[in-house]
Image (tube, rainbow, N blue to C red; front, side):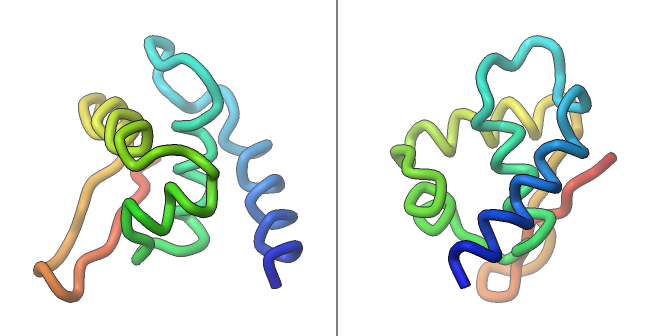
Amino acid sequence: MLQALHNAMTKVSLKTSGKVSGKMQGKTPERILAVLKLTPAASIPELAAQLKKSESAIERAIRQLREPGQLRRVGSAKGDYWEVLE
């Protein structure tokens, strides 16, 4: 299952490359968008574990994605999810 998710994430990442704001550096924001397109209910700890990054690195990348309006959190505290905006 992890291999299938990794393959799907790679395909989505290839499709989203170039769509992330120019001020962001590195692949982490692109990888976050790819994962959240597949699993919008993923939490920050889940993203950190899956991408093998620290929670603070994930939080920083999410802030960078939220500022230009590429990502937003939708819903209540228990039923919320991430919405990737094109």
